[in-house]
Amino acid sequence: MKNMCIGDKLEIQCYKHNKKVHRGWSEAIVLDIKKDYIVFGNNKTLVTEAEGTTWRTKEPAIMYFFRNKWYNVIAQMKKDGIYYYCNIATPFIIEENTIKYIDYDLDLRIFPKGEFKILDKLEYEYHKNKMGYSDDLDTVINNALTELINEYKSGAIMFDSKLNKEYLQTYMELKKELENSNFN
Image (cartoon, rainbow, N blue to C red; front, side, top):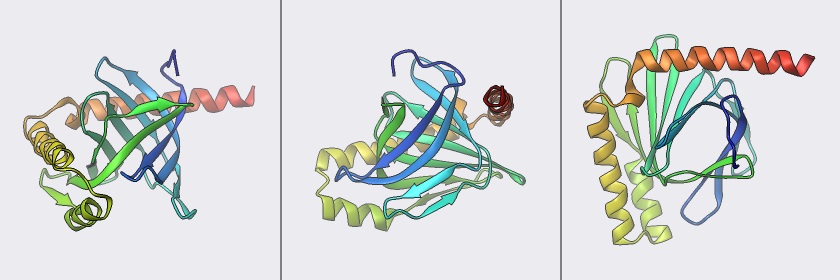
């Protein structure tokens, strides 16, 4: 995708280390384009699992995909506050209007009151052994998790609730414009 613009609609595909598709999301609307990352939004988006089952997300989400960081951050805009779901994953690429990345199992879940929890350690160890993650890859993944926790503790931009609410407003306005243009 050469000239991506705010308001463009993409899809998301998440892979595992063995290059198999793990999960896909039908929509990600571009909200902001920065040098080091792109911000997307979606709401009640269709998700398709590798085995073909589908479900929809429950609330609006603001998503940060980084060009050079081994994680992505999803701000889930729930009624009782903002929850963050952070995936340890490769930097993204965009091919054929699709954001693509490899997910490395470990996740950081941050709750509205500020506490956080590392998720899926057993899944990580299982896939590390089953798919043969190298020692170098293991180091990169664990360093990314440490960096992500430090970014959260230092109040990095993607954890700024005011900014995420502004992005949510931008998403709602863009979505409305897109729906109106589809009816004309």
